[in-house]
Image (cartoon, rainbow, N blue to C red; front, top):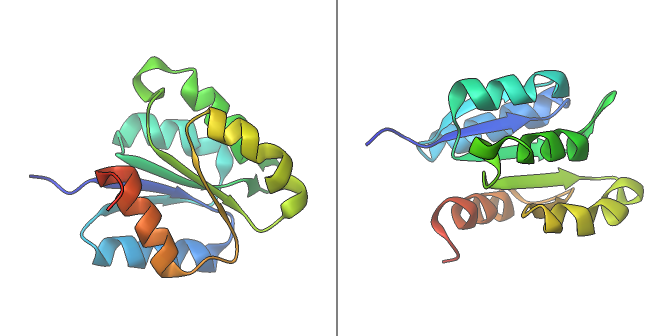
Length: 126
């Protein structure tokens, strides 16, 4: 059985590299991007089992990307983990993200917490 694919989008190159390494060590195929504008193409071209996305992607909003993704029937139920370290952005977006079926994390988060969320998103709560 092929490994599940995770698409990770974050404009922070260091965090993106850490998550790519973390998920690959767990056996996942990982596709990454530092740019929000190509997220929909990445998802459509890679058919991931999970999207992990920062809410602040330079000029792009992770929330608006998730809303566009949810409008595509094939990805309306794609598990999404959305995160931000900016409470001014995260706090007002959280109710909408939850309504869209996203798991929400506040940075900083531990790598263990991220792996737990990934496991829950892909395999259900343990």
